[in-house]
Amino acid sequence: MSEPVKVGVQQLPHAEGLPLPSYQSAQAAGLDLIAAIPEHAPMVLAAGRQAMVPTGLVIALPDGYEAQVRPRSGLAARHGVTVLNSPGTVDADYRGEINVLLVNLGSEAFTIRRGERIAQMIVAPVTRVELLRAAALPATPRGSGGFGSTGR
Image (cartoon, rainbow, N blue to C red; front, side, top):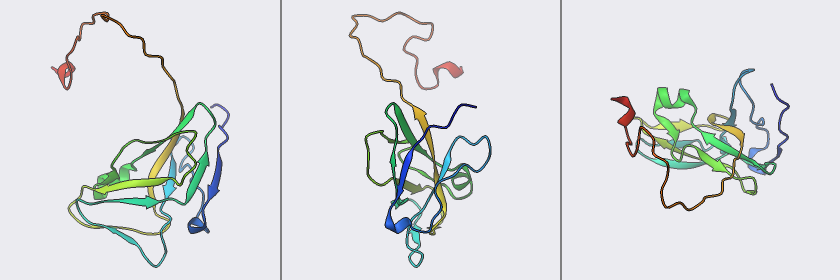
């Protein structure tokens, strides 16, 4: 396993007392993000609705890295709750609060409580590309076959 990438993190006042995101197993790829909503005001996410859930975190990613905000599989499987813009991207130069855009695709309302694990964040290196105009591109056996074309 490689050396950990150092990422500065600041907890905002509304996240006071909450733990920092953490890996839930030795081989986990994602850090679990936690809802930083008031204890006395749980957020009810009605079926078919979406909401921006604050985490109370600001991070300083090193140059050449991004953070991806992804769904937690358990929330999706049990409740139909997922990250709407999955994966959400946090760029290295962003210094605002990380919020998670959740959507309830289930048939019942879902209550989000303070400290609940709502998504996971994966930090990964970014490869930047240089696009080169071309009059033609090399042919491939697949060609322009898209959506489902390789499953036949």
